[in-house]
Length: 355
Image 1 (cartoon, one colour):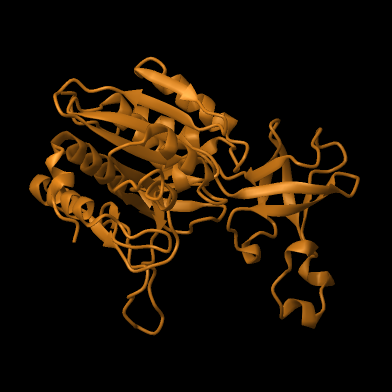
Image 2 (image 1 turned 30 degrees about the horizontal axis):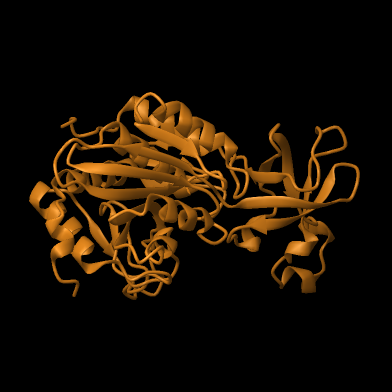
């Protein structure tokens, strides 16, 4: 059995490369190329399907192996140019869930040539009191690359231009959701335990409807599935001193095991198994519930005749903005928990009653 995977400089460099890549939903090619480069030397089978998912198989060697699907999505939220208003100014729409209030003044990279631009809005000097009292509507914003900014066209994607940084114990970057899951899954494939067949799905279009995961789950037809993602941490100080009882995930408390979200009720056997694994190995974890949102598990568990599924996420602040923030130790604990769970999983797990 391979050694327990560790996160060091090599893994941090890979995460940096993944986060800095531009891969808005529907145009995930830059991340796909990184995944293929990393895993072609170690995969037993690797292919790209019709939607652009990267499907990797790592066959174990033991008897009575479970087929375990591990999922992480490659895409990120961003923008699509929808109208050329000339002189380098473009009207755009959001791709995925974004808060329009936070967009004005953000730097972006446009198209596959990464043309720099800015999301422009009327400066405060030129606004009326009535305009300042209201949220800026999306249709009043534009992406401005300037008349000599480069060749872009309607249909091109744009992403935030934020660069990856390590800040003490924290990781600061765009697209931590879900490049931290992609990096984790790459390490799990490279260090796959022999007692299971690892079916790794690096999926597309999660942010616009879990589309790639549905297709990947149908192809793999696994015995069970774990979606690896990033989840919002709701742990900032409250001004009124009230207790936070909604979306209770926090930084520095380890990976978040999902009990329920808007799309999925996690398989109770898998939830208990992950918690028992954490307890047995001294790995910090937390339960993410209640709360909305969802992961690719929402599509996977409904595939074929039904697939027992659960989600495990690295907590992070400021999801779906120009810069997210996660803790390195939470990422390390997530990788450790998942690898330990894979290493001890047996078919008997699914023979137990789901309650």
